[in-house]
Image (cartoon, rainbow, N blue to C red; front, top):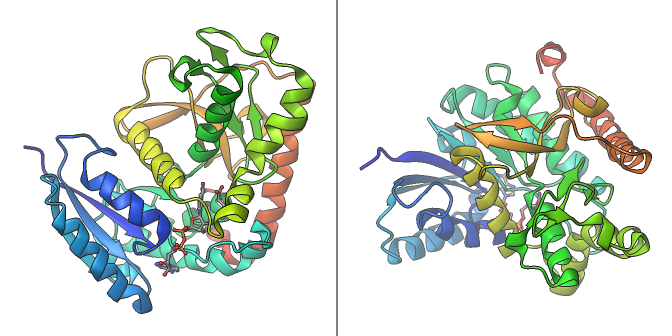
Length: 333
Ligand code: NAD
Ligand code: LMR
């Protein structure tokens, strides 16, 4: 039997976590032979609810669930963790734009970056989900000078899954037979759902996709899916977000399938001309716990303009949190 790994989850009593924790404990994220210790973190007011959720986890008698610990502070909750899923944040309410959340949530992630730096395992892998996720990841990473920026990632797998799901629905092709769909940029309405590399049954998709449907129906549907769900449900997406978190962490930790491309928000290294340092969603492949940007994709003028537009939004977001970005990590992060 393997040694258990430690996984911290913030916002552990919230909507996403109430789906996610059961999937992790069932072995969907790290494999059916990997025991897990869940270090669950909430704000003090939510500790009673968290206790109830922990009781339900216990009542599932999951063989892989080694231990559950509950914490009302990140300093204890991040102690020695190998993985950190930073979900807790003030969620967007109907009518609110993501940018409204920027200032409010970035301060939370500065504190959490510091706590990861000081208390987590030195090889910790962190995923930032709380919105605005890309810029929160930047803030967390810049406040963790002892960790590499590559240890922080942000979730655009939900956008990728949405893009595949909507394409499958339109074409009648099973999602498993669709490959190469890429999300570039920010987890926001400026993201670029790119079908130019995508294939249906191994054959290029673009020749059979009408351009007006692509740009006027499909792209806005993917870009605005989060808001559409929020309008219908009154709360932001949770089961689908939990599934995307499982997919993201599974692939990061255990590797992507041969030839498979997935999208992850990661610190830009300047690839495709994107400003270094911002957390931008790129096409990647994962192996041995690392990810690498897929290089050499030829981008036409339209694609290039989409990449630049979403980069501009991230640069603007970065300017909005400049006071939370320590200057001494500017050169290294
Ligand atoms: P939720 O309101 O149901 O739960 C959030 C939980 O976080 C609450 O229980 C709250 O008490 C807790 N919390 C708040 N501040 C905290 C802190 N500082 N430390 C620990 N816990 C804290 O929200 P949710 O539906 O679970 O969504 C969580 C976040 O994920 C939101 O910011 C939402 O916008 C975002 N989200 C991102 C994606 C994505 O793809 N990146 C998708 C869906 C939702
Ligand atoms: C989503 O894409 O569903 C969420 O990011 C929406 C939100 O703002 O919580």
